[in-house]
Length: 233
Ligand code: HEC
Ligand code: HEC
Ligand code: HEC
Ligand code: HEC
Image 1 (cartoon, rainbow, N blue to C red):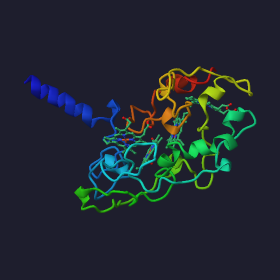
Image 2: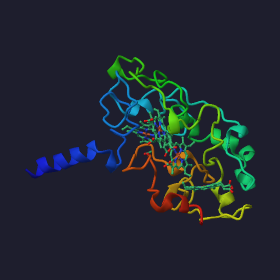
Image 3: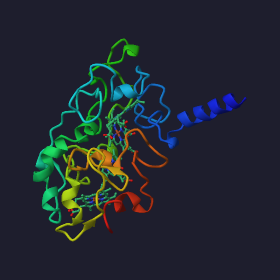
Image 4: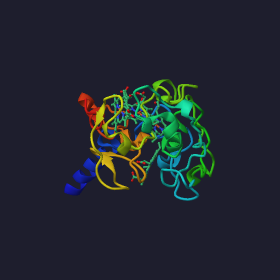
């Protein structure tokens, strides 16, 4: 009886994205996903839309990456800019870092282009055929981070070395200190990347964890707690 109960509890945990799983979240594009409105009609695997156990694309900032379209090149003019940005955060200073970050991986889906096809290694469970979609197969509206041609100009900056901006910046804004040593640099509990602690999309987001009422955030933003982890405001 105990075993049955444990199994039932385990099954309930697995079934609910509120407990932080990618299964049945908006990032579960499998045909049996209960959480996504954009989902495949012929592939019933979850991870395969981003990872593959074999023949993955190397050199990307997520392991065993499976999406071939992850090569968008962003120029300085595609990035957020303002007069109060610290020099080390200016688009001209960070464009290489942004291209070397996880942003191109996210944008391989969040750019409004069709999600059909595009896997380096389509799954054997689908006869090694590419996924197809019935109905919507594009990320549109707010979730289309590229907004057509606006790219990332109207989005929170990424690509800056956090150690350059923590302390007091040119605009008078100040920041919480980063902690730890590479590869475990953090600000609060938020991860920073590379040897210098660079901010990426995954500093704020966790692709595998939709959370309750949170758009895949690493921590809840209730009371703007995510923002004040970095900004002393
Ligand atoms: C929507 C795309 C997407 C899906 C679906 C996805 N992942 Fe990931 N995964 C990523 C990205 C992006 C990263 C890099 C995240 C980072 O840098 O923190 C990653 C990192 C990882 C890592 C290494 C870092 C870590 O968090 O442990 C593992 C292991 C992993 N994924 C396993 C899985 C498995 C297993 C599944 C299916 C159950 C899955 N992923 C589904 C995008 C995805
Ligand atoms: C395999 C394609 C794919 C990849 C790769 C991917 N996403 Fe998504 N993502 C989606 C889809 C599809 C949705 C659901 C959009 C909708 O329902 O309109 C989504 C939704 C989201 C949402 C929630 C949007 C909402 O309205 O609640 C966030 C946040 C998000 N993704 C962040 C990321 C980040 C950050 C990365 C990279 C680390 C990433 N995604 C990589 C396909 C992807
Ligand atoms: C500074 C933290 C931060 C960074 C960096 C960040 N995001 Fe977000 N993102 C958020 C928050 C907070 C929300 C929820 C916004 C809301 O409620 O409107 C969000 C929402 C989203 C959504 C849902 C659509 C929307 O606008 O509500 C998507 C998709 C998304 N982010 C993708 C990305 C991608 C891709 C990157 C990297 C290019 C990125 N984010 C970088 C904090 C961040
Ligand atoms: C991981 C740390 C981190 C988090 C989390 C974060 N920010 Fe930032 N934010 C930064 C850094 C670093 C800059 C670049 C500042 C600079 O160079 O002057 C920045 C820039 C900005 C700017 C532009 C400043 C300017 O001078 O143009 C605004 C506005 C902003 N953040 C608001 C937010 C809000 C709102 C949130 C929560 C949704 C948030 N940030 C979350 C680190 C963070």
